[in-house]
Amino acid sequence: MQNLAINGGPRAIEATLPSFRDASGRTFGQEELDALNEVIESGKLSFLTGTKTAEFERAFAERFGVKHAVAVANGTAALHTAVTYLNPEPGDEIILSPVTDVGTVIPIIAQLAIPVFADVDPITQNIDAASIEMNITSRTRAIMVTHVYGHPADMDAIMAVARKHDLFVIEDCAQAHLAYYKGKLCGTIGDIACFSFQQSKHMTTGDGGMVISNEDERFGRGIRHCSDKGWPRERGGRDHLFLATNYHMTELQAAVGVEQLKKLDQFVSDRITAADRLTELLSDVAISPVLPLAGTVGVYFFYSFRLDPSKLSVPINDVMKALVAEGIDGFIGYPGQTPLYKYPVVREHKTFGQSGFPFTLPNARQIDYSSNLCPDAEQACRETVCMWWTDRMKEHHLQQIASAIRKVVSAYLKSPVVD
Ligand SMILES: Cc1ncc(COP(=O)(O)O)c(C=O)c1O
Image (cartoon, rainbow, N blue to C red):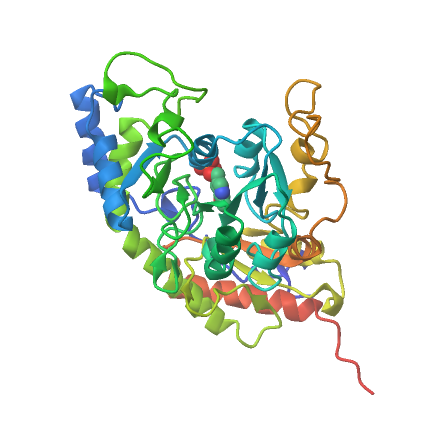
């Protein structure tokens, strides 16, 4: 116990770990710089006159083997584009996981649909098909599936429920670039999929996003129009067919995106190799890493593991503080120590003025978001340590991370009961 950094002992992690926050944990090269220069020198910073956005979209669609890719400003914008495409009636319901980023629920509420939270699988923490089915009503229109931590959700079971009830499936691949479910790329299994290229993601354009799909048009609209002011530019002239915002990606983002995409396979494989090695190093420590389902390839957005509070001699937050003192870059619980529905935007209906729309719409389903709607999600948020991960973790980093976890967990494990 004396030895812990939190008690004044030496840190287990001497070096600074590579971090997604700066160049230490991101891989940019001359290629990105040259591409940015090219755009600046061309003077064409918008897709309207430049070529990089179209090039990025073509390359992304090709890598995923889909017909369409639409580049947008960020991952939330990608999901908003998908929900706008679905065109729900006010009060329609969209089922999602409570263990995900707020960028999922914002578009649902913004389109006046009701977010309905299904519980997660206690092992993978991904949305659970049986819980989805229990939450379906006559107003349900879609399921939004986040592949959380980069590990694929159980898509066979989810797609079976979706097809049975004729529901649209939005895959949220913001954390799951090049993850595979039974040989299929995540993002190509549902009806539409959304990616984020925010600073912490497997590839980055700072902020940025992509929507992919094989659909040409449905719900009376085209996907591209849903991030472009409802504007069918391809017809020429100016027309605005329906309510949709402007979510264009800039040519600067797209220029970086084209180059990052070329390196994505390497980034992802380096993340996986490092994570697998850490799992091996931690095999004798009393933690439960969150691992991909059998038959899937998870791509480790975070490296996450469960701690069992009943086996700890101190509150889990104290354990986390000790881990941070050793140099671990992480936190307890995703999206926080409570699931998504407990945030004021959902629980207290902090939406449009004082109206509480869409939650207060006369025909909307009433859900008490302050109750423990999803027990497995609640528990996951209380017990999961999420460590920021990058493709730049090397053997000496992994050795030090493992030492830090081993040191802290063994210091705080309750002594074994002796009969
Ligand atoms: C699972 C998930 N969904 C959606 C988003 C939203 O993406 P962005 O931050 O690019 O808007 C994120 C990003 O953090 C995410 O991790």
